[in-house]
Amino acid sequence: MEKNEEIVRNMYEAVSKGNLNELDQWVDQNMTEHTPDPTMQVEGKGLEYVKNFFTQIRNAFPDFKMTVNEVFTKGDKVGVYYSTKGTQKGEMNGIPPTNKSTEVTGFDLLLLKDGKVTEHWGLYDSMKMMMDLELITEKELHGHNH
Image (cartoon, rainbow, N blue to C red; front, side, top):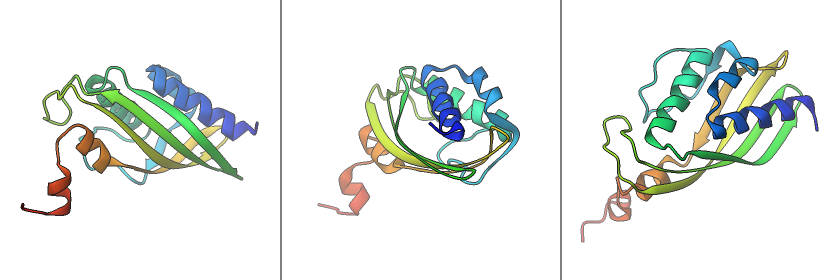
C-alpha cells in the first residue's frame, strides 16, 4: 500500500472511532478547506476546523461511523470514496434530534505534503441525509404540490 493511502486510511479510521486527537499527525495545522460544509457552522481553520467539524458530527450522531470504500492515489493527491452512517440523537445546527438514521456516501480529494493533508475538497450526498432525517420530503425536493 502506498504511504499516502495508508495515511489517509488511518485518518478516516481515527475519525470513525472518534479519536480526533490522532488527526494531529496527519492533518497540517494550516490545511486549506476548499469546500466548507454549508449546512454546518464550524469555527476555526485548518486542523482546528477539521476537529471542530467532526466534534459537531459526533455530538449530533454519537454512533457515527465512516467506512472507506475506495482509495485512488496519483502522486501527492488521494481520492477517497467513503460511506457514513449514524443516528441523529443530538442537535445539529439548531435542528433538534430526529432519532432517525442516515447512511450517505461522499468523495474527498486530499493533497498531501510531507505526510500531512494540506488541502481538502469534498462532496457528500447531503440531500439524502436530509431526506433520511425527514427534514425534507421527496415531494418538497421535486417541488410537487399534490
